[in-house]
Image 1 (cartoon, rainbow, N blue to C red):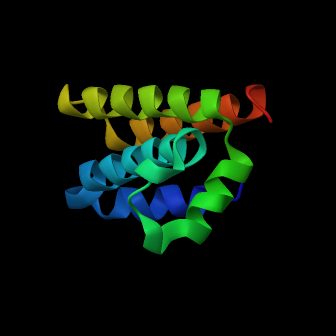
Image 2: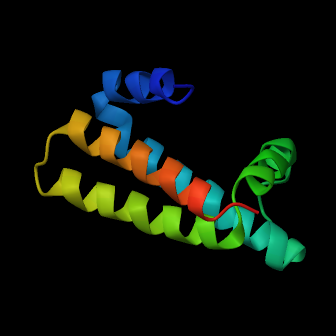
Length: 102
């Protein structure tokens, strides 16, 4: 229920959906670096955001979410409906987050 307004905002800006998905992938990838090898962390300006991501997503959840986002990008490239892809991605991410709780 909290994620739905964000999904609507992403869907309303169709031209930048792939950029948003790419940024989500970067954030989750950087969260892995932040936890595993902090010296490799490059987004120092987003340290507070990274702490929130690390609090909510385990290492395994981050890895699986990156796979889900890449799958969503492929679906969009294949011509699937944007709203369906975003809805599926959101539910997949929430499911992964629940199953891979810290």
